[in-house]
Image (cartoon, rainbow, N blue to C red; front, side):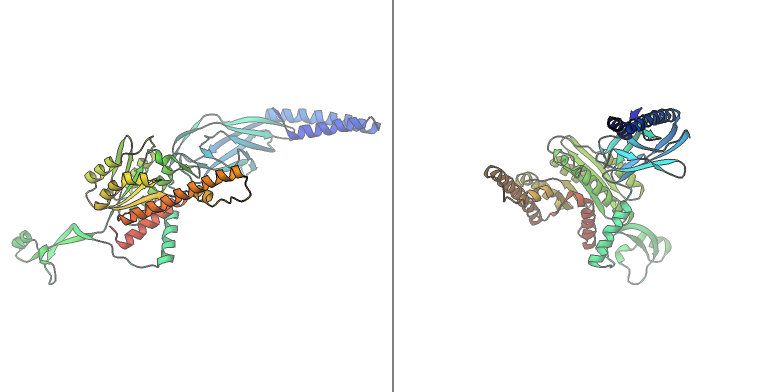
Length: 441
C-alpha cells in the first residue's frame, strides 16, 4: 500500500483545525469528528484495495516499426471489488521512447483500458518487462498490482507498415510537380514467348529456320519486351553510420529508405531489387530479384544489419559488385562523407562502380551544423564570443565541404543526393522515380 497526496492534504487539514481549537473549542471538536471519519475511511479504503482483483493483458504487435509510432493497449477487468481510478507504469526497454512514463487508466465498455504510443529507436529483439497497475478506490491509498509478470518478446523491424501510404504520397507529389504522363521504359527483346508465321514487316533476324524447314512456311520467333530494371541498395555499415539523428542512427535511416524504395520497385514498377552491405569485416550481398516474395527476404536482410567500428572496405565492395552484378543497375550507396579528404580516398572506387552502373551517392546533411553556423554572436562576453566564433567557423567549413563533395561527384558523372536524414526515405524514392522516368540506366 502507498499513501496518496489526498491522504496528507486531509491529515494536514485536520491538524490545522485542531490547532485552531486553542482559540475556539468548536474547531477542536470538528477536528476530532473529522479524524474519526478519516480513520474509518482509510480502513475502508484499505479493505477494498485488499479485496480488489484485476485481470488484464498487454496488447502489442509482435513486429514493430523502427522510428515509427507504435501503440500498446491494456484491457483490464475487475473480477472482484471496485476500481475507481488508477495509472499504469509499463517496464519497457529504454530504446522505446515515450512522452510520459505514467499512463492514466480510463473506463471502457468492458471495464478499463489504457493505451499509449512509443517510438523504437533501434532494431533487434527486445524483452518487455512487467506492467504495474497502481489502483485506487477512495483516493486515500493506492495498491500496486502486477498485470503482466512474464516478459514478452517483440522484434523491431525496419518501418514496413506505412510503406504503401508513403509511396503514394511521393507519387502524388511527383504528379503535381511534373504532371501525369505515360513513359516508355527501356526494353530488351530477350524473353522468348512464341513462334508464329511471318508477317510482312517482321524483322528477318527473328526468322526461326528450323521451324520454317519443318512446317514449310516462314516462321519467326516472337519475343516479349523485358521492362524490369535492376536496383541495388548498398549500405555502409562502418562507424561513419553510427551518428544519431532524431533518436535513430544514420544506418537505420538508410535502412528505412532502402525498404521504401524496394517496396515501390517490387510492387509498382516490377523491377528487380538487391541489397548489399559493406563493413570493415566483410560484404553481405542479396542478389537482385523480382516478385513480392522477394520483399520478405529484403526485410530480413535489412533487419540483421549491424554496425562495425572502423572504415568500411569499399575496395572489396567494388570487387563484389563487379563479380555479381552483370547487368547495368541503379545503385543507391548510403554512406557519410564528412570531408574532401574522405572523398579523395573513395572517389576512384566510386568511379569504378559508376562505369558499369548508374551510381547515386546518398550523403546526409546535418541541421545542427547549419544552426551553429547561423548562431547570433552579439551580446556574448569576449571569452565566450571567441569560442562561439571558432564553432561557427568550423561549422561553416564543414557545410562548405559537403557542398564541395556534391559538386565533385557531379563533375565525375556520379549522382549525389544531399539530404537531411529525417527526409531520407521520401528523397531517395523521389530520386528513384525521377531517374526511372529519365531512363537514366
